[in-house]
Length: 529
Image (tube, rainbow, N blue to C red):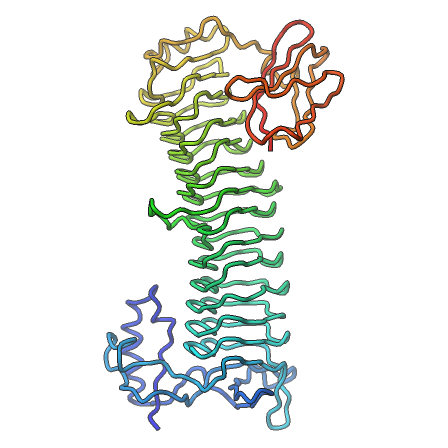
């Protein structure tokens, strides 16, 4: 029988094509001197209860005795020409070894060889690589590790793995796997471990702290459930193409660059996700660039207070309607919310320092904004709309007595924007660089100190789900009303029945107007969840 030199597919994947040429040629040269398959060697075979012969490699020859399920050293294969050149890999005349496995395999918890009983604790690298007839595998709870490419490019569609703790790199890469339950024992998932499989639903156990690069890359997921404990989501970890909602746990600290389906740039391809929520946590959370870029159907976004950074293009070209910028975010980065053509309201926190280039460019339904006194700079085209875009900013309220730095193109349609500034600050704004072209300063509107003094006027919690508390320090409330952004009264509660019950008010952004017994009016934007 001809012996066949096995080439590790680690070097034959699309990600390592160049390396494949070198490794293949070196391996073929070695194979001409020794045609034996040197990796991985098996030490013995045992027939399982179903009559399948499995190959084992001893991993511990002293107590506790352990083995790994491994590959055969002398495979059954089709009589094919051995490739002489790198380009012949995958071409007619070349195939990987095929073993004589049934469609379903049950791996035993222990096997006996030469009088010694070994616990089966792992599945070796490439143990079932390219085994197209293999469809179902049941592992015992004793198996703790599935190594790199163990089932890659096989025919596997279902696996039971109740005790597995580690699933290493590319373990199931490009297989039709559609049925798997990740056990609570799982603590490690390698890069691309489940990449390009057929998984539609997955639940990440709380024991997994990192969802690495490509973990579920290109999987047709319709549902992914995260548990508390997850801390990091890596680049291209999964696709949200068919997922309608995503809720992230409070323990999350980082979502990496291009993490969630951001490689779908085709304007004709619609990512289905409509709802994204981040649970409030204590650790800082960073959202890197492009995380939710081009989520055209995303209309509801709930950002947690522990978010400290939102990257460039993070939510660009989505359909979100309302944004409450988290209080720990000090700058809004380039193009972060650009081309969000459904965006109607943004609540900016005190402490925000910078709004960078084109951060809210082409948001035609964003008609009015209030910028806190902490804002120092607003960059080029930050709130501008292209000439072919109708609408755009009409009312700008600046709470700072000192004007922030702007450029000549920070706001478009400058002749139609009404600028509201604090009492006594109109002259300072008109003489500041960049502001001289704005003619519509509202002289008859002054912002009294009390209207924005948190010690005088308190509203909590905000955002609110049901009960909203309102308090005027040392004063009685004479009037109270909730308005939508079109100026219509939505709710005017009985003042004898405070706090205000907003449970039946639809989710959205509203303006709360409170009148004190002295006739002064106080205003606050309210976000109803």
